[in-house]
Every structure is written in structure tokens, then in C-alpha cells.
Length: 134
Image 1 (tube, helix red, strand yellow):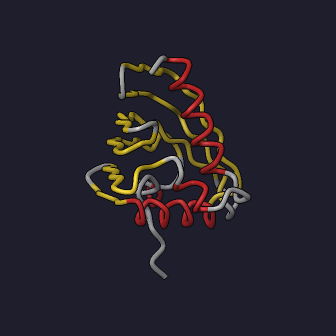
Image 2: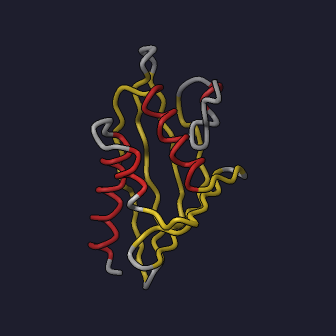
């Protein structure tokens, strides 16, 4: 995978994640059926990730992702990005994310990431893996 391919994939992924018009089934199309995501020590499978995506859509009004660095080689992508999110309660959070993606057959099979809350409520430290279980 080239850096350009990786950048396009990540832009499409984050656009789909943030767009409520994109169904969760369409979002699942970016991932393998055995997808695993490890975020700040929390592990999500594909169903858990889709629950997380639904939680984000219920919590956030708008999301902007600024990619600071993307590196791609074979079936691996690493990136650093800054997420600025406007919450439905009117507050804003900014998070720095360092992520390592593994691809298989053109789909994402694994993501390992660390998140750092730059600004916003400390209650949002878990925003990278939060699932509303209500």
C-alpha cells in the first residue's frame, strides 16, 4: 500500500464514521469480520466497534480529523491524527491519536491505538472506546 492509498483509505474511513447517513453496515465494509481494535488497553471486536461508532454518533455533532503523519508499507498503516469534535452538549474535545492499522484483503483487520485528551472534559478520556450500554 502506498502512502497515497493509505491516506485515501483513512479519509474515506473517517468520513464514513462521522457521517450519520452512512449506515453501520456500510461502515462495517471497511473491516474484516474478525476485526479487533485495541484502544488504550480496551479491546473491541467488530460488533463492539460498531456499537462504539453508534455511541459516537449519538454524542458528537461534528468531527474534524487532521492527519499529521501517515506511513504505509505493504499491509500496514501508521498514523498520527488530531481529532476535534463538537459534542451535542455544546462542548468541544481535542484528542491526539497514534494508530497502527493492519490490513488483509484490502480491509482493516486490526487497529492498535493510543489516545491523548488534549482539551475537553476529563470525562471524555474514554471517547476512543466508549460504548453507551444504556
